[in-house]
Image (cartoon, rainbow, N blue to C red):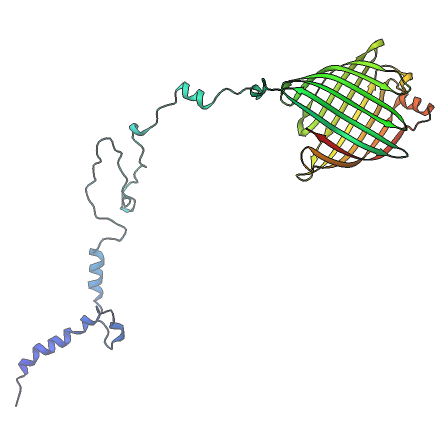
Length: 327
């Protein structure tokens, strides 16, 4: 039977229009037919007609409610010819009021000397700064200790310092009062008595200061006035160089001078003696610290001449071993 060719035209048209449908199929790349690409003129037309991805369509500005600051549009900076909006500022109603004088005084109270809370409390403290054995040609025992009672501003001290060698001893006993007049500094006023075997006892009125200088240097500067118009000066400098949390290297310098000769006690006028000590101290705890070190002593001027007459050396060096305690 002969078919009419006119009836095949709709079928041919359907077959010709069928391939574009495969371009929308996600599995089209597995097929054998490629999707037809749109014409260049059609793509250009679609690109010009579609808005840029960073551009937002123009729309009327939204008016904020009364009392609220306008909010900047995040896309306004990308619009051609659009000026950037200023950052939003809080409304006057949200701002904190200025502080009152009462609030400022409560936030920043007046500062005092830091001792007000200690004015009414008293406590006792004793400290054995140096208890040591010194060795050169002979063994010498030395001590330097104090006990005090009072508060952080005013304290009463009783101290003793001396040494014993070859069955003879030389000692000093002090009773003095200290008053804190500045940060880290105290004035000192008291009495001292010197007593030596084979010599004469001397009584002194002492006046001076003690405290901590810059860089952590401990200072003790004292002037003495005694009977028969005798005068004396004493200067002690000490520094604690902390090597670790427990180990310290402590250099110490002491100078003593007298205003006039005292042959009965082997002292000449001017600079009489100087001592330089170096101690390596280890703190078992803050209150207990054994140490070892060395000390050099030297007599000067008239004191050195009197020592030579008595057959004593002008200078000597001693190794030492001791302990420091306080409570």
